[in-house]
Length: 197
Image 1 (tube, one colour):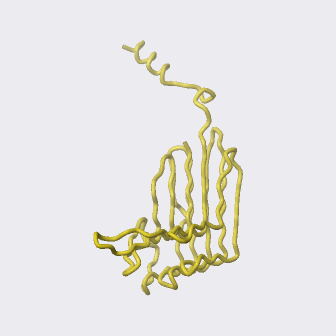
Image 2 (tube, rainbow, N blue to C red; image 1 turned 60 degrees about the vertical axis):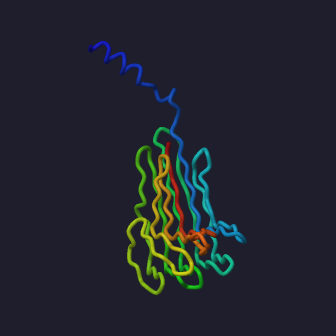
């Protein structure tokens, strides 16, 4: 019995050089709008395959009459080696969505991953107001209906394969039809994704 256990353990153990290194990935962006007439994501940063740091920024972002944002910054960093990690960060100053239906004085999205662990520590929304109501530190995946528009998910946290996607403000645009509601677009403000596999 003991010999059989040792054989099984020996078969399960594979040197790191044979297994290959873990792979880190990360992406962040300030504003993304996807509708029938608009498809824009800016500024954005994607982690290079060999690791390192990438960043992009914009002093002001305006997308049609849907979103305005100030001081927008996206940065990612990470490494693909025996101690792989990935960190993704998007920060924005003042934000106005849908003509002031949603406003915030500051948005920070953070996603951090190491092998087997991911978190959104450091993510925040400052002075967030939705439909005229101030919301302080919304819990992950807080949904608020927007009459005649659709709904918004605040502090959206979506587990992914080996990682996490954080969307601080995710508006789903909907229109009524004879059979229910039809999704017509998405607005995402402050997004960070990271994973290590």
